[in-house]
Image (cartoon, rainbow, N blue to C red; front, side, top):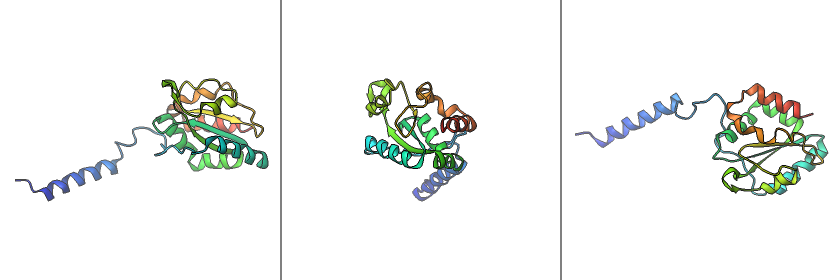
Length: 165
């Protein structure tokens, strides 16, 4: 007869081995944010970021994505690293906005994208770089970030550095 205490111990040891090996959670080479940071008042946060950008001579980095999306979590993970944090602190005001699943007709906060001239969000994430006056800098690349998880760290960094002006 297998004793319950031994079974629990064996299961616990197996789970610990899996977690320490980290193979289950990281089958990729990007730092994935565990929770995509979203705002409860996205319109207000965008306005506040624009005001701070005007005060500090920065641009706004408006990331429109979702927790369900691995590309959104990958981008948020990169943006949370020290290398990207330094760029963002020096050149941007960062705002995350939850857009749900716009490609399935369940989009949220799409009016924010439209406010800056982006009519449609075909997927996630979307990256809008704005001047402090609310002018869209990267109209040609807003919706091209849907492959953020497969982009290299340098590719993402270089593009954001270029867009920082």
